[in-house]
Amino acid sequence: MNLRERKKRRTRDALLRAALELFATRGYEETTVDDIAAAVDVSQRTFFRYFAGKEETAFFVPRLAETLVVEALRTRPPDEVPLEALRRSVLESWDAINEAVVELVPLELHMRVYRVIESTPALLAAHLRRSAELEEQLACIIAEREGLDVDLDPRPRIVVALFGGVIRVTERLWSAGDDVTLDGMRELTTTYLDQVGPALAGNWRAKQSP
Amino acid sequence: MNLRERKKRRTRDALLRAALELFATRGYEETTVDDIAAAVDVSQRTFFRYFAGKEETAFFVPRLAETLVVEALRTRPPDEVPLEALRRSVLESWDAINEAVVELVPLELHMRVYRVIESTPALLAAHLRRSAELEEQLACIIAEREGLDVDLDPRPRIVVALFGGVIRVTERLWSAGDDVTLDGMRELTTTYLDQVGPALAGNWRAKQSP
DNA sequence: TTGTCAACTGTCAGTGGCTGACACTAACCT
DNA sequence: AGGTTAGTGTCAGCCACTGACAGTTGACAA
Image (cartoon, rainbow over all chains, first blue to last red; front, side, top):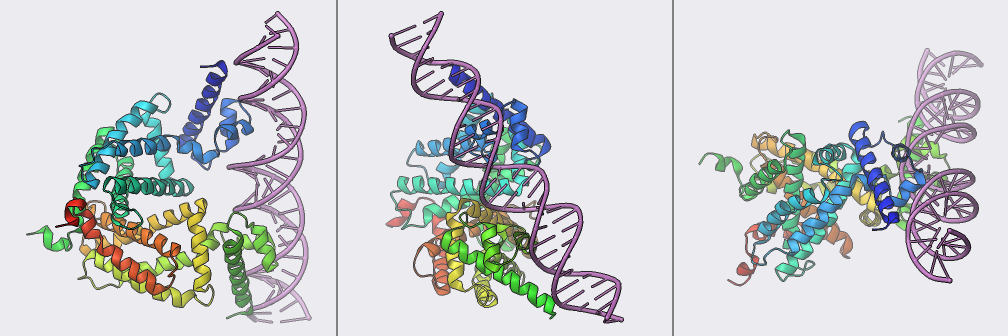
């Protein structure tokens, strides 16, 4: 790797870490791009040569995670039932994310940034849009696995929407709670997904005391 | 009603219509706040005294719709099963929205704006965030109906997430298709919701030819 | 080693969304 | 009619972001 390339990577990493650190401590809206650039001692213009916008820095890790989930689902054994394939893809991709990024952005920092994302309207909106795009990709893969046409058969999109909803709920609970380990997340996800069947079974009150 | 109040309402309505019309024809990002203000012949500053931001004008109708759905769900008979109560609330609120707003923003204009919302990343993101907030409210109401605690029992949030997912999918199909009537939407929603059960039943391939 | 090319960076000027401060006008009320 | 209050315009300024141009620094060959 070139000196040039190394230098580039170094300033990009520095910008990224500075941004995330500032977001996590001071808050997203309270952090200006000038602040981030100043913390790395480059011009504001340079920041925008590495990132398309302030937002992009906040979603660096989530972005990686998304690509890994897609990859994981693509390589799942085709005999698995859709919901099961999705669940396993997510669970297995978390390890990959952690390995790939822990040097650059420690899990603890990522957690703090995630809380900022959820509590900052503009970031939350962006997060949900990204999730929607991811779900669209996943629906297409599921449809292909099952030999269906996404535009003719609604079921792929429906399962993925349901799955995505559950994931979002668990993510929120996870980041709000105090067990911010990977195993905690795994456990939470599993129990919630197991609730899906019962939740749709109809009359809950009748089912609670049989 | 005062002369003052009438004047206020008139400029607000004028700003709203001008904004929506411009969004629908020229596009959201291609329309500046100055354009909107100029179309009504007021200063830019005045625009911001009526709307918190450019975005708010785009979501004027959706905002009304949200409050109506919440109201509808609140007054649903308590013996209905959750998914059914949700479905009926949405279906019945559409008529109310149409009545309440058709003078100010004709259905046809609203449709064009809706397509702009879906094709403009920033607006789509905002739309999804609003939906998420609405779903949170609905989950709380459902939980109350069923005598549950939203934070202890995951099922209210799960059904609402599923329901919301289906609604979003149908909305997209509806606005993309050519039957943009209310009845078309009603029909689409009904059929899609009926697919929920089968979609989760497990192995689709085995079920397709029994 | 040196000179050339290409890539990276800084500076500057400008746009668009949005806000605070202040002065001005017009509607309200007595 | 005259004082009060609400609504408006103007101006100045912040922040995210972009294009244009010039300066600097690593890459590579002669």
